[in-house]
Length: 367
Ligand SMILES: NC(=O)c1ccc[n+]([C@@H]2O[C@H](COP(=O)([O-])OP(=O)(O)OC[C@H]3O[C@@H](n4cnc5c(N)ncnc54)[C@H](OP(=O)(O)O)[C@@H]3O)[C@@H](O)[C@H]2O)c1
Ligand SMILES: [Zn+2]
Image (tube, rainbow, N blue to C red):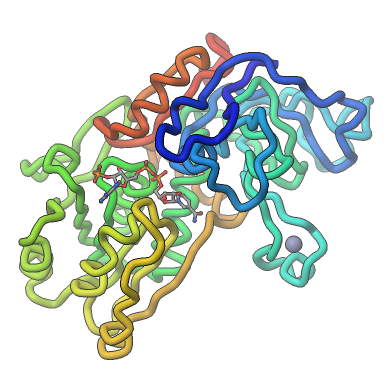
């Protein structure tokens, strides 16, 4: 099958090991019972794919390594049941979105139906990624799509929106009227968090290295690529950022910081979070070892919470929000699989806010 994959690792020049071409496909007979093969319509890119290209992964990487965590498509077949789905399984041809978190099913966490201690994401270890014509996933990871939910919208959800949802509401306990500081400008998680936080009625402040990646100053919603980005305040990450953020919160400080940038923003996060406030961390794009600032953490009684991805139930909630027209994920760019290099450049440059999508089944990916 055709796929977008890493041919090796390149810590400094990740795009130099990006390739598009044929990769061997596992035989259908080898697909275990309890697993489904999904024909991919639209896949989404994440910074996770950049980590894989750089050679950084939770597990040893087997090359060629098919990239991608996010996919929406059609159920094509089931393992161990050549005659079709068993009871309760979506029919062949059902439109689905795929939950990218694959649990081991055996650890204590799995037995308690909590977070798996040995979970892997699609594209990690021996799991194929979603940036190919087909992807194999546990049947439990399939979520059928209501008819009003497009493949484009669905393919935005499984990583960035799911992580942002988990960070804001379950880990961060965000409530209407609270202030939330979101680092990462036009990035996938940042735009998802900005969109979801605004939906809940929070006061949203976004930071970026550059003015060009901040919300426009007019205060109105911005339209881009077919979605709507709600208004927010913007602060450039420079020497004045602390003062500006306190001014925007009436001197009180931030209730909840959404931290994905790491080394470059951690100190700022600790300084501007209010006494008794929270920092939720799910990423460290610029490095994972900033000064811990323990004195600020205990003096201000800051709660620091880590998050990785989110649950199937949370992803179902996001699908429902799209179906109810309350959520319309913003798309930064839409590319053909053959132009994977263009798609990855779009992700890395971040000129447009939102998710970068790859049309894997051209012409068939409409509603
Ligand atoms: N734990 C999880 O489950 C999980 C899930 C999703 C993502 N993540 C992690 O979260 C991070 C963001 O993911 P993503 O997919 O949203 O990435 P992305 O789309 O590439 O966005 C990253 C953003 O970080 C900002 N940034 C980059 N370098 C920076 C620097 N030196 N200083 C300040 N800001 C900088 C950029 O904003 P500006 O250019 O505007 O400054 C960029 O838009 C990644 O590290 C990813 O691995 C983790
Ligand atoms: Zn487990």
